[in-house]
Image (cartoon, rainbow, N blue to C red; front, side, top):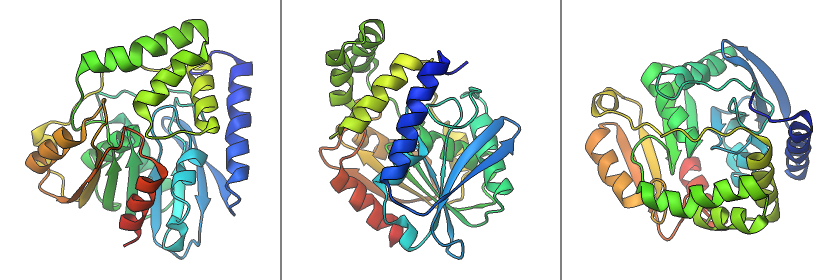
Length: 282
């Protein structure tokens, strides 16, 4: 099971609902049945607008990623998806990162929602899922925006070990806030109390997957035809920005645009999210 206890799950879902309320938006919540379990989707914006599917990263949830992009509904009908086996309202089944399961899952959600010509926006692990979806079936997807995505390059494992995994393991063991703040400081350009509380609860109450992250092969990348835009974070210790841009330019023939977010850590700050949003709305 993904959640370690019923109490832990309740704590996280309480925070989830708080965040959703604070967004102060008109929305509908839909449960989509898939082969991989039930998927929760938050839809907001005019359904006459073109569809945009928004996918959060590891340890995240749909309300959190919606909070980073408050203006997308000016042009799009936005569908923020809760990724399975993450601290949210979707099924607890963990999908296989090495296969196309995450791609199959997302495409199934898109088809069940009856969406066509989808703009896909994936942050971090959401970027990995977006690329897996393209590998599986590009038909319903019009364009893709990837923000500090998993699956193109990995950072130096030693740096990750000392700045992230050791403090994280210490936090899980001791529940001492000092350790989780170290992790947040290594990952986030800036963070608020909500992000700190959510991450703390996630690592205390969930069985997170720490297995190595795969990298897309040159052969798979060269088959993709959908326009891809990438926002790479310069100071991302997990997926270094300059290294990512270099490889992306080499392997993706459909690469439309790359932006290096100067001084940004893995999770961009609000100024960078505004910049990204403006590009998506262009």
